[in-house]
Length: 68
Image (spheres, rainbow, N blue to C red):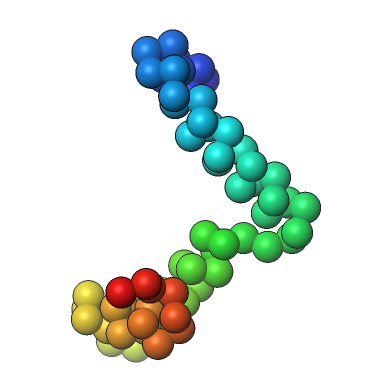
């Protein structure tokens, strides 16, 4: 519903909705989830000690998920 309302005001919003839909379709067909894979690499919800931003960035860099 939000994408329909947004596309009335901003016609190019349809491309965003199409991209999200294509991503969901690809995830369903291939039985993978890029967002889930990225979130699973983060150190949150693993218990132990509190996670800092530095810890999270270090884990992401070690897994090759960042481009910088």
